Image (cartoon, rainbow, N blue to C red):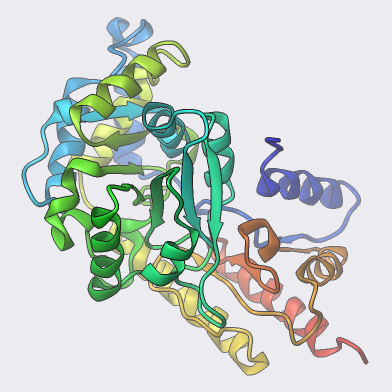
Length: 376
């Protein structure tokens, strides 16, 4: 059964606490607290004044935007990407839905390594597929080919990769990625690569088609402007892959959302072709990560340091084996976190540090005090 996203539920609970007068430190947010850069907003204002943008647009997306996305993807591809290989979608979520609708037949299985973004299993189910959660080896947060092979069946159709990962922020290095891709190639398994956080990597993020060019004909890449450009509300994402997949996904989109807002597409075009803001955003996030480490490290909470994105994923089993119990106690004090159980990784919490620095600092101190007093 498909249920409401856990993060959406937490947003509702945080709003209720605020209405009750509780000071809330919301570490559950999956978006930057920063404003969309001014040049992007200006492009949208200009586009809104153009009558042609008041009507339906091409289902596949504005041609200029598709080519700008293709140019960006070419930097991480084994061969040049053309705009016709790109479908513009209403955020990365729709790109995933379209991808699975295009790839899957009823009963097809999709391997989803844990920890995973909460939407992956639901997207597979919505398309009639069966999500198969693959647990990493003990005390690891990354799967290996051996883990994947143990989960593979004759019905396995695809494997989802997310690097930098949500919720851990971890990145597969070249050797790890090559091993996984070679395994997938040997078994004719599709790769669905979610690269939503790739521009927020604190170190280089290897690209699947460059690490293993043989996978290019069975690789679908998903991305968006949401995280890297502080544009979550604009709802512009994309998918790119072999023509047969893009054509089928475009047909799916023609019967669901028709096309992405043409004004939002103009904003996305300005983001991808205008001044680069991602370096500044990365610097801000890296400083916030250091703040998280300075407060959480003394408690022994950060076992794995993120390589990108804006999440830390502390192991809280020393306080209670049930992460939901820990999250509930924190929530009662106004500290909103997401239990690791939601991501297929019990015993952890996901904390977003994409919040204003003073709030981040005070919230972390509140959390540290609660955990320090645990059991006293």
